[in-house]
Length: 524
Ligand SMILES: *[C@@H]1O[C@H](CO)[C@@H](O)[C@H](O)[C@H]1NC(C)=O
Ligand SMILES: *[C@@H]1O[C@H](CO)[C@@H](O)[C@H](O)[C@H]1NC(C)=O
Ligand SMILES: *[C@@H]1O[C@H](CO)[C@@H](O)[C@H](O)[C@H]1NC(C)=O
Ligand SMILES: *[C@@H]1O[C@H](CO)[C@@H](O)[C@H](O)[C@H]1NC(C)=O
Ligand SMILES: *[C@@H]1O[C@H](CO)[C@@H](O)[C@H](O)[C@H]1NC(C)=O
Ligand SMILES: *[C@@H]1O[C@H](CO)[C@@H](O)[C@H](O)[C@H]1NC(C)=O
Ligand SMILES: *[C@@H]1O[C@H](CO)[C@@H](O)[C@H](O)[C@H]1NC(C)=O
Ligand SMILES: *[C@@H]1O[C@H](CO)[C@@H](O)[C@H](O)[C@H]1NC(C)=O
Ligand SMILES: *[C@@H]1O[C@H](CO)[C@@H](O)[C@H](O)[C@H]1NC(C)=O
Image (cartoon, rainbow, N blue to C red; front, side, top):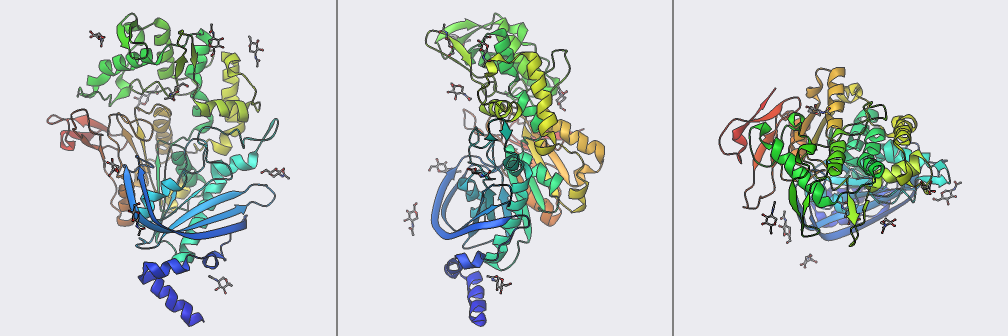
């Protein structure tokens, strides 16, 4: 009997069809979790998967065809906490590369769903995500934030913030070992936005789980930056003016034009936004064609005030710094959205995540009307968000000693035209890690990506191969001095290439073809 099962196992490793035979419940019967109780495990082969993905989790757009995996769904709870969490693992039926990759979530969703498992599985990774015990809804926490009126669901918030990520690593690696008969040689985290925050949380709190962590456009500093995402809407509410999107687009265009050349190249990308001191009040009265109305309009002083507020970020009634703002070439449509009726009656369209965060978690009152928030009350919300939730989900501890000592490597990058998460929060965190340990570059590097939007998009250089840079660092000790990146094709079909520089180095144009990486260097 035992001999037979050994033969089967050997055959399974050699032949994908036989591996499918092991894709059965009893292969995974022995999975356990410290602090958790397994409720159910379901196992099924899924064959001939195809999927077309846009740039996702720091990968370029990927088309997957003919993928065969063993799908394992593990449902468990933390006894006494009344949570029910699902971990989904995909184990390639052929061509396992010996590695495990856990995939992060976005917005208020702990994981990105099965679609996000396609690129890693197609590369031969055993891969997994967790739902963290609540629906995979990126924009709304309405179904899970409160256990009863006025009471936060602390267990689910902790699962989302940290605990379920540790479990995902443990269960994903254990399922991989149960299936292939050996534990993964290397384990990786890969995520962007909330997935970038989660990667940093793992480095801070579970420093031995992953050999390599890729954590793009991190939503860390959560307790501060999420509240800051509401700031431009507060400013519009206080002014009681809601300019049209075409007016903000005209301001973004003027700012980009004014600051474009400061980096030495006039190419529509503001590569050094820190040098840009453009004051939008200088273009008040300038006319532009509004695509929404088909009419000529003038830039108003109110729109200039709102744009400047979005770039400066929030400060208190007394003028004290609260958080960073967006860079001037970032689209304002994410955080400064408005909508207008046919009759020209305009109102604000706040980004959904800060609305839910402030109403459900900070104020614990789903019926609160944020239109009524005063600046003073906003400041209180800002302080309370940090006071009540900083230690749970702030994810901004700069002490990475344990991650370093465990031999981990971490990469982050941030699009400088990010329209949702101010890149300066990432500079700020990285600088604090650097202050704590001057040798940070030995295990953690940060690559600003000029002209790139939130996790992708924009006309700048997107580092869609950066995961491979992490693998080379972890497995071959090849430290990424730079990271290759490319732009999407412009209107003439031209793709621009660059090698992104690790902070505190900066990309500098040295002359020649602006589309070639060799025309740029990294300098201090
Ligand atoms: C599960 O554990 C039992 C007891 O330790 C062991 O006999 C059995 O072989 C294990 N099964 C698998 C599939 O690993
Ligand atoms: C696999 O899927 C492709 C397209 O989705 C289809 O054309 C092909 O026939 C399928 N192959 C098998 C063996 O089912
Ligand atoms: C994926 O397939 C779509 C539809 O066929 C195609 O338009 C796109 O260019 C492909 N993308 C890649 C990265 O191959
Ligand atoms: C457990 O959670 C469910 C909803 O998921 C809820 O209906 C039930 O009342 C909770 N039980 C306790 C004891 O809190
Ligand atoms: C944002 O970061 C850049 C790059 O480090 C810096 O030049 C700039 O002064 C920062 N802006 C603020 C408001 O801190
Ligand atoms: C606005 O549209 C008019 C008529 O289509 C055109 O002549 C003008 O150049 C446009 N102005 C700008 C700033 O695009
Ligand atoms: C802005 O608000 C409009 C109206 O609600 C919505 O259709 C659009 O998707 C929003 N834009 C963004 C970028 O969120
Ligand atoms: C304008 O729109 C707002 C929000 O949609 C609405 O409350 C208000 O009554 C409208 N005002 C007018 C004059 O139509
Ligand atoms: C918001 O303010 C308006 C007018 O100031 C008031 O009528 C309304 O009751 C307030 N709503 C809430 C939910 O406090």
